Image 1: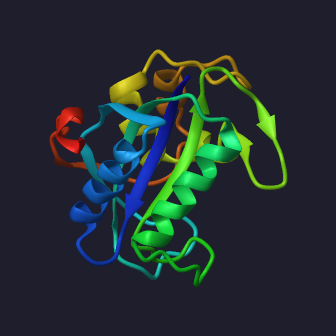
Image 2 (image 1 turned 90 degrees about the vertical axis):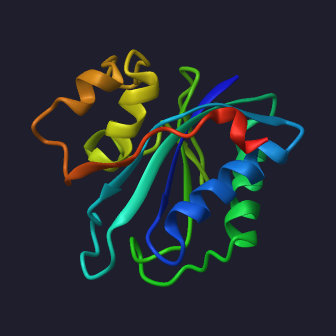
Length: 169
């Protein structure tokens, strides 16, 4: 299955943490990073009194079930030092499952597509770069169409070109 993820960091070595997270994902036998967007600097959404984020999108192939991939992701976040403090607050790493090959899922632990990705420029702009034609199964709109809507929140500016997905082996 092809899964699109959103990764972000706003404390510590933000860029290094994003790279470590991608390497950790790719190190799993059941997950392979197939494409990575450029890195974008973005403003915080929700809780504003915190440093700006670096965000990127990644496409991964996996044979895992959604909750199994969530467990892998949460393990990586924990391994890299993520601690829950303030909701939408600063974090060393945040990895969200955004889209899963047209799947719609609602459970106590996971919602796919990600519940609020349609309003967040920090998710949509990197995702548009690697999967602009991908379709949100709920709205039927492409990522490019969602990203172009005037209701999308937050500024996004390029930070660094896309790393080679093969560099995370």
